[in-house]
Length: 269
Ligand SMILES: Nc1ncnc2c1ncn2[C@@H]1O[C@H](COP(=O)(O)OP(=O)(O)OP(=O)(O)O)[C@@H](O)[C@H]1O
Ligand SMILES: [Mg+2]
Image (tube, rainbow, N blue to C red):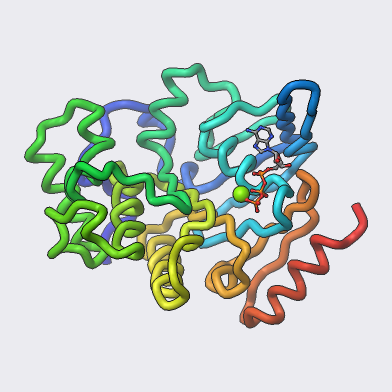
């Protein structure tokens, strides 16, 4: 068994007093985010409370426009809230100054999107090395770490391929390898299989579940697909920027899960 959370590239930044145990949790309280464009005001997140206190694979569902992507962006430090608190790994993300927030995004969490966001002129290996390259670490060390991760994700023979020479599923696995570069305790994914066929999607969900169980990570995935959420431990359902409810998957099949999620999404506030 690999020891969970032992980074092959040791990070010399961040607060070493934060134990790994404390790192695998997140919570938001009274979270608020309002977008203003011209004279149009959208309350995307309005007083959201949510907590996950252990590792595992978790899903966020809810109708289009219910605030799922906004929530993920706030948790990942890609955007700032207008109110409330966000705690990830024992750290108050909403209070971090800009430089610390950048470090948090790069080293403490991983983020995976529907669009794979790989740099087209770089090979798979170079794309995965990128977070470390930005940090100015020795190239040999970075290459070894990137190759190890790509091999772990079944891409040992694709190191020198550029994104346009990889399948969609392979590109998403490269993006996941890049997100895992600093061995983060938390991984966020926003509809990671939205651009993939169903067989490839199924393998991706298995992979995310395996990362959560074998590495002891907290993986939080936004998804519209009940077939994806059945791989998760618990489903959080958003409605109009608040938490409509949550339920444990506990052997539900995709049909049963879809019904539960739809009931919560429709339930009166
Ligand atoms: N940058 C922005 N500027 C203005 N409004 C925004 C912005 N981002 C999101 N919104 C609005 O905030 C609300 C929530 O959007 P969000 O993207 O979080 O929804 P979502 O649940 O991820 O939806 P989907 O399932 O369609 O991806 C929507 O009404 C959206 O139009
Ligand atoms: Mg979205």
